[in-house]
Image (tube, rainbow, N blue to C red):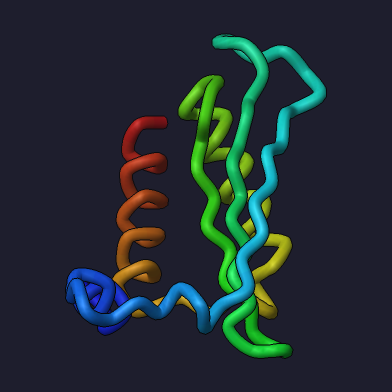
Length: 101
């Protein structure tokens, strides 16, 4: 749990006014195994030069979502910050994928 999550649990503290927030819905252009891949993206402007993006799969195949997420992460690797926990999770996912082949 990070500091923002702890603070957000406090009924007296509301940090939502500190961030500009934009919401988008995206849909793939090709039909997948379980329909079109649909995503929700929330973009938080933490500072003028720092944005946080949260992606969620709304509909479609989970494997297609993971493929999209990996391609996006690879394309943005020079500008995306990962925590040590996320780096460890990425390594574990890659190991599992290699073992399943």
